[in-house]
Image 1: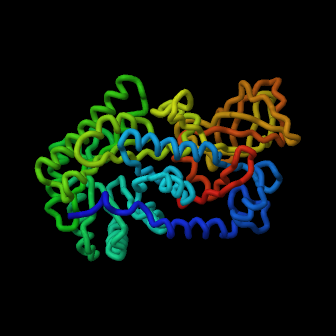
Image 2: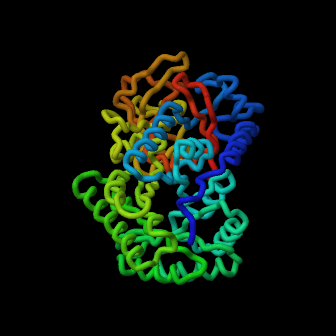
Image 3: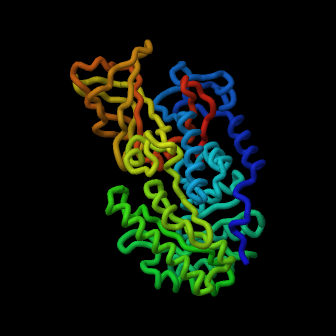
Length: 435
């Protein structure tokens, strides 16, 4: 039998060494935000209590708020415990060892990855239980995984299969690459017209039968992604997500009934859950055999756009409140027209795939707070943001403007270093990214 649930989520000592190495690695002045530094490490900046507007950092700059980040991690961990699900947060949100360490220390069951490159990055920092929530067909990637699993018995990577072809390809390449133990896999159920996943339970069972017959694969459960149905939390959206989750659970039950699992029935894994419907996932997947695994990632920083309007955990009035933790800061570069301002942050710096950034505040060089009422971002170039502002606004060249963002999963990938600030704007940590 293949062990999954009894394995270890991470190697605490390996992760500690990674964080220590990153904290003491010299920061390259070519990194965005650090061009004015001659030589420094993250640990030195923390020790010097460098501040956001203290004259040592350059802009644009994306930062994390320590208080919101810590609160979000603790909030989601408590919510999952109460609702009897385990959390494998999607690592693609931040790809940051520092952020990941917080999630694992709070009790995360493992980490979710989207690509074999992300799996490798997480293995290298000490994560030992990884859910690869995608189809793996890259022969070189399969080869690396076969070597990694053979070399490290403590490493558990769980993959996806959604067709007989994907089963055959994995079986062939794992055999050719000398895999010494089976790869645990979840059978993925999909939605017609959407992305990956078998299009019916019957089709998924055929995939499971093929995988169960393979000596290189071990069927450990069923999975799907209800987020392909949208982000609406109206009655129709919630019922569509619930129906899909019930289908995933029904697939898992059929795997048990037909004896297709390569783990004990009680170790069945049922996985779903982005950052919009994880409450629905918990309600529909908990209560049967096995373990419900939620893969939400965006919760860790939340945002001011997509998830602010679509999260099951509201920003206020709830014991499980999430708070936006990401901010982008940029200087006013030009005010070429009375109602138009250009700031020094563009598509290379802030996400724009769901919403443009939201203007939250502005401060003059002397510390005076500017009113931002009536201001909005209307467009982004590579390096510029266009703001429409009231004609009588006192916003001026040299002022700093700070923005909220929408969709954190396309924010972190634009930065290799993200300062973590306390509520007095002091750097308390620097989050590195592994994109």
